[in-house]
Image (cartoon, rainbow, N blue to C red; front, top):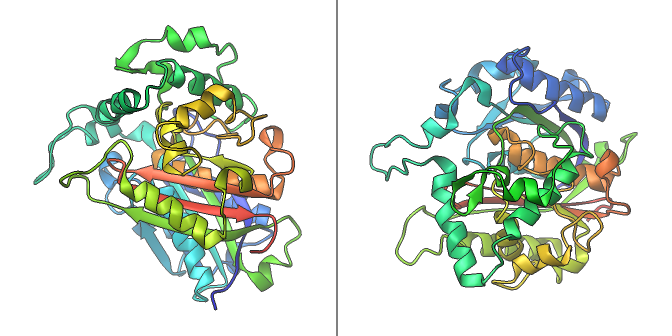
Length: 385
């Protein structure tokens, strides 16, 4: 039988456009040391380190994990690097949890990061790689046609994305770590912002951020002794599909639907909208909130936008989404998925500060990446599964 795994420590950096006062190792160390402090552990207590980041080409530093583990304090400890494009933060957390659940290690520190100020992700996503199709458009140019496809098939009102952007940016005002803090955010401000990739406007997009997120996970006998609340891992799931194959539905990938169904089955959840108290969903462009409401089976196909319109995804709605401000407010790509997982853990630990959902007992973390082809998710609770 698998070991139970609990999150006993969470550490995040301040997210910002440029953390020039920190080197790449310094950025990771800040998050890792905060997670260790939260967990009541020191490096001596940690058995292994799992590091995640986006493609090396984003920063032009190849295989940085080879020096990062020693540089942040994990010298001589086993280290594993994970890479699944934009979903990597979530996948990294799942790999770390699996090392505890399998009994390989008792305590694992996992950390994911991105230092976009020293890189050019749009360039990295635009060049023509061997044996692949060049998008020549960056992430926004790739995803905009998928959003337009969603609008066409669902009949969603054109201002749905604006409403999501306003909500998430208002939530970010409650999160002191969030990169974007737009005090005067309004529907009109988003609507009047420049159209970048029709139908995606400037304020409907995520920023480029520096930042790192870390968690300490432990097996049941150790986690149960924690002086602070524990987020117990109830279920994890990862699914992927090729970028291109005949008949692929890029608007609503099969891998997303299968991932959600498998996750809920593992967690024993019959009605996810009723049984999950809140969720952090990977929404780099605002329209992906209604799309992933369907992809995570919270809403019927073509009806995810209704949750936005009804206010269901607001802080006081029946399923609050992206209480932290989400990817729209902080986007260190390699860490963005882990931030979603960590925020879910903070919610059930009752430690999310001003963006805490009262009474949150079960929360979902979600990440996706690549050409909507990698999906990673987990469900955590305040009680053991």
